[in-house]
Image 1 (cartoon, rainbow, N blue to C red):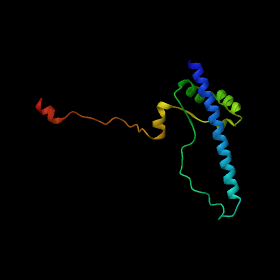
Image 2: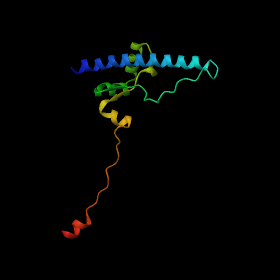
Image 3: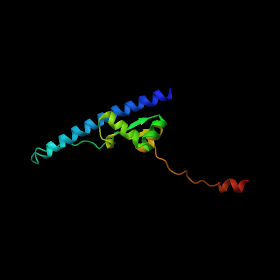
Image 4: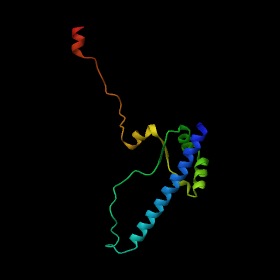
Length: 121
């Protein structure tokens, strides 16, 4: 049920956070090694900017728990053997479009009654 889904997503969060941490450490090591060389040798290939890693879920309880419960963040970090700051942020799938900029929210357009219709009536 709901509890099993929550823990399934929590397991996914542990795995994704660990993978993200591993990739970030490898990248830092690569950059550090490149900066230790001369300027010509340290020209690293340009990469397109990307969004930071995060976990998108439809579990409202997991999202609320991770945003409000630092103890749970610590448990997740401990389970993945990573630092608490390396635990991925969790976002609701329904909010992802807004956060990623795919959906723009703006105030409704102001409307007024047509003067033509008012004159005819």
